[in-house]
Image 1 (cartoon, helix red, strand yellow):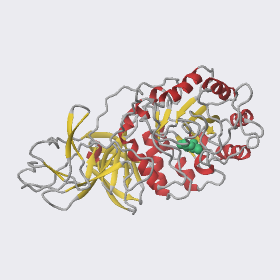
Image 2: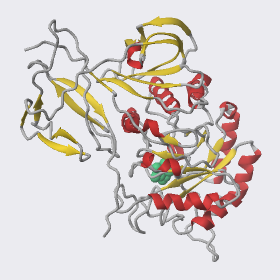
Image 3: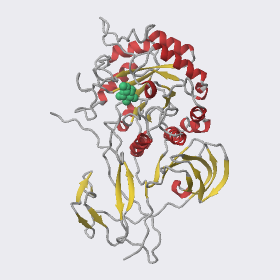
Image 4: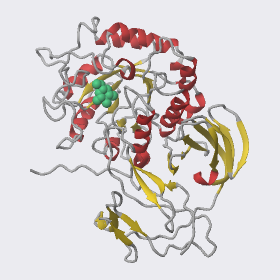
Length: 510
Ligand code: GAL
């Protein structure tokens, strides 16, 4: 017998070796910033609303800190093409026409974005009954039309991608990538630079192929509406395995911002905004800016947080450690050699929380609190402060002293001396590694002979696991799995494991 305490945490040991084959259209070298109507107006938009929204964006002064794309979303399209096959708009909703609307947006000093779909029709708000035009099979004509109307940005959605009756298919029976490369190639044959935003909702692991296709790719199902803290958590868990796939010109898109909309508290909105910024997602405001609250303007306008997003290095933060039901630690490098550390309080209570510098690899650092701007001086080993319920702590760390990397003894789950019961069974993963599956729902795995040291005490346990079950909807544990770990027969302690990857899609040959 040995005694040891298992810290309630999972640390990230994942290491991704890959080359980013970016699109290299020279655009979105930094994540795009701007405005999109969807989270606040859904598809229920018209020209006067768009014109007012563009004016509101300018009046908010947010373009001066970088928000300069003004994008359309669903609801402006026509239902029939012209006799010669040109895309049309809904003349009731957009009476002056999309080109005139684009000119107006440009006249305000903003860039203009349009929206279409890689399917037979585009997405709508009446469960597919609207039959607004999509671009599948018309890519060349539509790219030519959109650019002739002055488009600088195209969000390309994924409704009706399978056939003319299947509105939204999260499991299409073929490879979606060609739908998106067709529009990429069509755009590249126009003479206008157009930021290209791939939106297939993360269903076919786009981080693995979309860097060569678009300037960004949606990694998940919609954040809302309605928005919720649970949606934010679902998306955060989904980005864990793919943070390394983002880079200049090619970004993980965590979806539109919900800052300024109801449902989330101000600290939750700050966590959401900090995370989106530091992960290098496009920052697309999606709230009504006609009467923004001061909190909304303060969050969206925080230059220190925006600077994380627009940092010259273009590297995403990555997952470092989760203290289950307690807090997360994420970090990443910045161009000036400093590090951003992000702590998210999972408890729905304001409390004193201690951030351990070793969780981001340091023993000491000079720290600045990026929300307040306060210089915290040199912090050693840890920093304790009050964090709001579901709120963030975002620190910029410089003059860092590295901490020694933890050393682990590796205990394979499939070792013959371990005990499996209740249906847990070994299996081969990736044709190379034997793992143990079917743990949970009665299945248990017991490691024997784990060295707890002669004097017992606290030991750090890191668990290698595979969880490739991504989800489109919020669940009890969205894009995560719960393990319950008991040491020496002690009480089971929950360890929550975020998504570790997705199963790559392979089209069958028949
Ligand atoms: C979804 C997309 C949303 C929004 C919506 C419009 O497919 O993910 O961001 O564009 O369609 O109906």
